[in-house]
Length: 607
Image 1 (cartoon, helix red, strand yellow):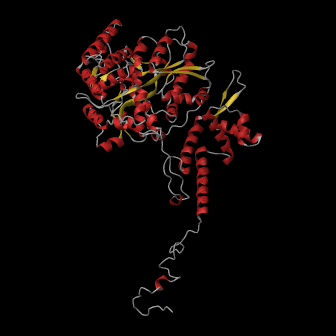
Image 2: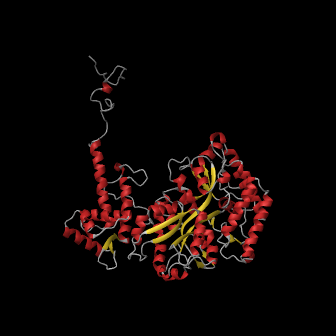
Image 3: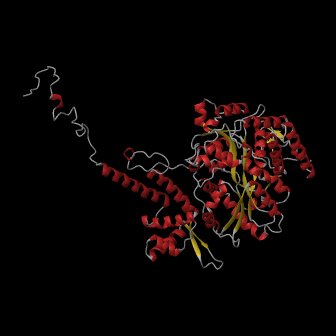
């Protein structure tokens, strides 16, 4: 029989008195506990968490949607918003049916929502007898705030949800971030444009997003949309050919920023100043340089729909592994490309536009900007160059400048550390080479960043860093701005102008711009959109470009809207390609480019 040790004697190794079956000091395996238990089983804890979430959802709905009849209104609101976002028409009968309520109750609820400003009705026919029902701007704003709360409650906002046990059941969910733009509402009156609104677009992610949103945009405008999306050179040709018709085939055209000088000087676009004044349009939200690119001689000819920044993008992981510091000068860029260039692994040091014509022409003029020179002899300012007030000798190209020579020599150095097909590469090709892991760095527009910022299968997904263009010896950091603005052809039928202007303003609004970004674009022309928390959550690129813009680095002067710009780019693209291909010396190519550009500009009487 085992006995306890008496008195104060120490217990020996065989003494089990400390570990007896009723001891409160040493638990018996995993089942004996020393502390209090909350008495809630794991299954019930999950149920309580779900009930807690449901209760918070109800509270959020009451708080944001102002439900007057309790949860009975939710099916009606949900159906209304669903149809708005998917571009499906709703009438009284379909909304009443979706509500699950009796005929009388549903109609009373519809009337209450109309009177309360949560719903609008719009005539569908000239007689006004047929109407459609839509969520009002107020309801969409409330719904947006509700969904932000709901996302946090359900843990679907992209962030790790705090454990329910750490949150007081009496406490409301965290306040959603402010300044988040709601979805755009429908116009109060359908546009009277006959069969359709006719749009000529550029084929890129922003306009592809617009195409994907076609039904919703048609719902907003109340008219079908027909569109034609073309590559950059074909788009330029189509705009010119359309302007030569007696009456325009298009209501709205997308124009590349640097073309506006030419288009305005040739009278191809409608001046918008009077329309802007009469509609009390607020343009302060646009990035200043984006707006200035479509303004010529103080007259606005377009409204930006996307603004893109050409950056040096690099793989953070590859540079870190190679011990390479992200390059900020052209010499450092050559050294980094040399170090990262590993053909045995299928990785080139750097990708860029080297294709003949417009692609390498753009590369030349934008890299030239980082060497401290504009492609035209513009007046210098403390911000770079004045690209908005250009006349006379300021329109003379600068192919014979020392900076132009240094730019081409720099591109020649990069050739040996570039992909084998570099002299055939254009915008999409270089972005794809980087996205697929075939290039460690690239000069690339943010317009095509969705290839690696939004595609989780990309080798560069969430591994990219961004810098302004690396500078030459006399240059300073600059981020060349690109993009498109929507314009109205000058030869449009006069009777269509008012409604087309309403459509253009709607398609370039802040809420519409946000819609494009959350549906596949990453090119924002507005500060409010770039700083929207939901937009910034899409990619770190958004905040990076916005920060560079606020520092004054994103500028339009490297691609100024000077008349003849498209032709000068084409000339550069042919002559510089000959130099890079070895068909001409650098000096011979630059002299030929200067002679051809001078002849063009003189023939047009610019100087």
